[in-house]
Amino acid sequence: MTLESPSDTELWSRARDGDERAFGELFDRHSRTVYNYCFRRTADWSVAEDLTSVVFMETWRRRGQVRLSMDSLLPWLYGVATNVLHNHRRSLRRHRAALERVRALPAAPNDAAAAAARLEAEREMWAVLDSLKKLSRRDQEILALCVWEGLGYAEAAAALGIPVGTVRSRLARARQRLRQDTEPDQADGHRRGELPTTLFTEEPS
Image (tube, rainbow, N blue to C red; front, top):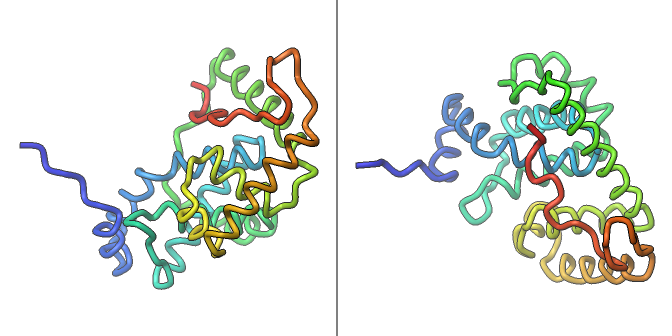
């Protein structure tokens, strides 16, 4: 008989009391999702790896303050990641020593094809981010969480610490602005105002 994996709530209850193994399980469960989110916001795999480590270091350091939403640690992790992204250079300097002690993400590929795929992913992601520059920072965050990460309104609200109604209105405003400002891209076949909704769900391998 296969035993069910413990829920985030169960693991976090143990981690909050100092159980590093339980925290490691949460890291294994959610680090890839946080990693891809950080990449979508920075278009740099190396920076995304460092930022992911900072997110989990901050979560461990502030574990007494963490509140789970809907039996998931992810909304909290997205919120920490969003704050870390605001000032990641300062955060990385402050956490440099601690980063060495965090469990490493999978190593970057060494073969030429995989390396080329990573570079192409960064180039394409920079193009997408460039198309979002006219949006406010907050609207970009909500677009990233709701469209790229697939969070519901309530989860995004929990991640950003804002009302659900604010998420709804800002997401509608962001989409409207994109419809007005994004030029058609005939080469890629995108219609006016469209952006990829599942862009780089997984790191190229």
